Image (cartoon, rainbow, N blue to C red; front, side, top):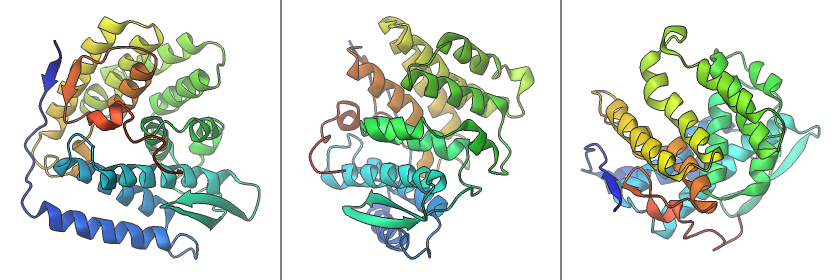
Amino acid sequence: MATTVSRHPFLTGKAEEGLAALQKNALRLIDGLEDGSTDLGDALRLTVTLATTHCLLDPEGSRLPTWESWVNAMQVGSAVFAAATTADEHVQCRIADQDRTLRATGMRPYVNPESWLTALYLAVVCREKKRIAALCQVPISLLRESGSRFAEYDYAWIDALQTYWLQGSDLGSKLRVAIDATEPETVADPETVGHLVYPQMELFHRFIRRDHTGFNRALIDALEWHKRYWSQEGRDVRASGLVALAPLAMACLAHDTGTPIEVQSEYLPIALLERDWCGEFPT
């Protein structure tokens, strides 16, 4: 029998109006990418917000506009790193049903571990293997050049994920380095690390060990910690908490390799988890 983890309360008054405004602003930003009037970092943040907000009114992720919003966010996430790493003056990126010519950006403050992880998780949820492979070719040294301050566990975690996808060596030891770096006494923000960062590493650990029972236990824990974190006053009104993106991505990996997902939650839109929309249109 599946375990249910309910989503924390979230106000839905005027949600339709808010969603329409987000949609309009997201398309405006996307349309501004080619002429350089839009910052790719801003476009990524807003398209992710739009995707998660769709799941407020469509918690199963079963509607086409919801899927389109997730695809758009995934495409923008990939474009961030395609534009940053290309050796040419321009790069072709498909975003929102159009092939767009974007200027190379080189390093920007938003080309950082947070954006990389977001882009990867979106690509995993959308089952975009080529985009995942391209992201895993992004040098960690490049992410260190952003000028933003990130913890060593971020870089170690990315190293482990890239090693897995590229079938490199020492995956276990690299994952252990990442996990050890999240020890509460060694981090600046133990709450965020304990509630959001460590749980995704534990899920990945159970996934690579093919520990189906342990994965489902860890998934319940990850969603409960996610709920506890985003239920806090001030956070409970942010769309970021509506979907547990990292646990969802790990659950998608597990689902696609035969692990029965025995957890139901609005934090894990079932249509995204079970890839209901994948392949419906070119992405």
